[in-house]
Length: 362
Image (cartoon, rainbow, N blue to C red; front, side, top):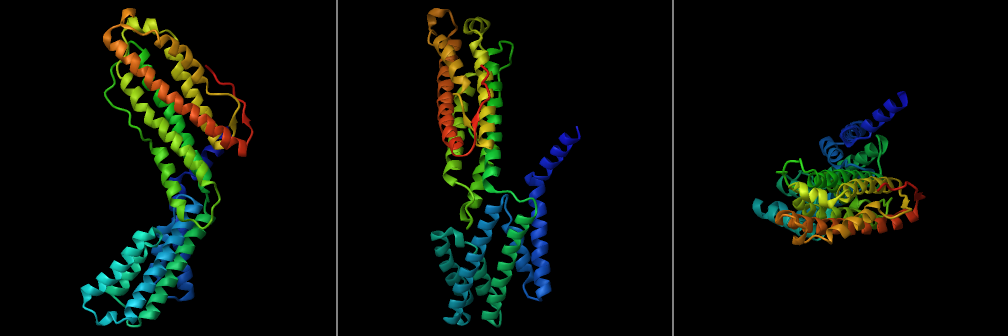
């Protein structure tokens, strides 16, 4: 009991809602006290840099810090170059147009440097009396703040990108299994009510995984294989895209006659699919390879034979006939993507991890 309580408490501490604020506070305090201790100016620039570079994982923070430093230096270099070219003597609007315009063109070509728009704007709108010293002070403050962000992310509940992404992808698959089982359950429960809402093709956990990967794109430290996680994410996206078809087909329950004609396979298939999604989620988190194929594909073969017999001659109502045809197509698309996911899991688990020895339940 105590072990379970400790495990639950540990999971809460590692949640992003706890980690992110804690890392941000430590990063800002590190930047502030370092700048004050060194008696360097522009303390606020350091604090704000630390505040804005912290991301959901260590690589993401390192990437954001790298981008901020590189962009700041690029903006300062342009601002100083314009000053040396006679910027202070230019009319105010043209100074801003020149500085921000040049930096904007650079940022379009290299998005990594977009923070340079801030520094070049500050130097052109409100240049210091001693422009070179002021530019150097700001560059130093930005570097201190950005490095403090990395320090905070490394010291306080650090989390690498790959396990973070894999946890989100696994959660997305578990939600997918429950969603499909619930939607298909309406189809075979003749006492169910017609659903009003529609199931979309996007899921928050998968979107979160995509955001985490995006945050890490500029990281100078690459601690994971981006191609592997991208392939997993793409396949899970494809699974979610197949759900709306099945959702439309199973919006209303079948008639009692159709339920009786369809048999147990229609009930067993959603259960098998949910089990497969739980297995796939576990394999993604542990990098295990599947020892057997997805159980749902075997169950679908039995259902497919039954659905292949669907025709007006069976005495089914026209609405039942149409719904069964669409459901057949929807399940086929969903399980085709499941097979593709299994193939990726075999390749992924073969690189690191033992086979998944769980016996699939039909």
